[in-house]
Figure (cartoon, helix red, strand yellow):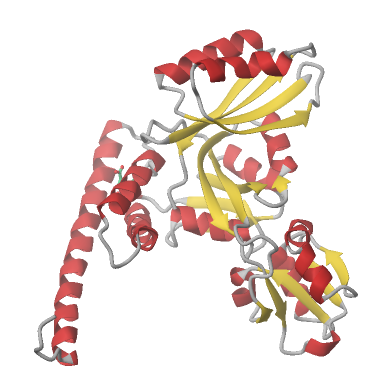
Amino acid sequence: MSDTPIHLDDLRQRIDQLDGDILRLISERANCAQQVAHVKLAQDKDAVFYRPEREAQVLRRIMALNKGPLDSEEMARLFREIMSACLALEQPVKVAYLGPEGTFTQQAALKHFGESAVSLPMAAIDEVFREVEAGAVNYGVVPVENSTEGVVNHTLDTFMDSSIKICGEVVLRIHHHLLISETTRQDKVSRIYSHPQSFGQCRKWLDAHYPHAERVPVSSNAEAAKLVKTEWHSAAIAGDMAAKLYGLERIADKIEDRPDNSTRFLIIGNQDIPMSGEDKTSIVVAMRNQPGALHDLLEPFHRHKIDLTRIETRPSRTGVWNYVFFIDFKGHRDEPQVAAVLEEVRLRASELRVLGSYPQGVL
Ligand SMILES: O=C(O)C(=O)C[C@]1(C(=O)O)C=C[C@@H](O)C=C1
């Protein structure tokens, strides 16, 4: 360290200079993105502007290049927003999510697409699927599994009746808080509203701190936050977005039982996504009802050394789908190894649908 004193004014002058440079470079980048849009349109009048595989590559590269002092996730988040704004210049992306406003699903949508995306709340998971299928929005965001509470069955079931594709995934750390409004008598809380999954994730904390409060399940955490506004003896369990949206006070922070509590969301769309280099594939398979069916199904994955990341069984809802398995694994359907496994599985199964190959979540 040199002994020369550092002056605040000098540092601020340097920051002003750097901000000027950053501004110029971001504008140059935005100009490039506009030119990309022209090139895409010249190639195809129905060009798709959002390219998840490219976005994943950009973010991964930034994280690899980063030398600090900002941590790589923080840096990638900044670039996430720059890309989101650049994409909005090409064409604003419209995203439906499981609402209402203030849900974790909205937070996941913004984390994945950035703040420049237009996000639209839907009342139910099926509605998100329908809006995407109808082309009313470009993409949808739905929850699929939570590390504490397990799978969101409704999302998996909806895939069985739909031709929608999976275009991406995003994992969100879920922090729950106990929230009250300005009219709540904090010492008189006798009722707590939340989504059933959130009650499940905060069970031990509630047993220890509010064993006698009535737990009232509602359709979303945001709905819970809204209800608290009108009742002086009630509290809600919800996340930061809902707390901010309804102006509630946090009286207990991060009350989830497991500190690593997280939820995985899927990005759904009508598009096949090219390889990004680090991808996942999701399939749904129906097997004939016979002994050894599951072994037959999994054996090719084992032989080709393909890494399974999840397997779920759902009851079949038609005669054809005796056993239905939802399987996620590492790799892209265009990789020869993966293509070979899919071919083998197709021969053994009574039905196979590839729901999508997509970049593994980066942020
Ligand atoms: O490379 C592209 O295809 C672009 O449109 C540029 C860009 C970017 O800003 O880097 C913007 C949007 C896409 O989703 C991916 C990347």
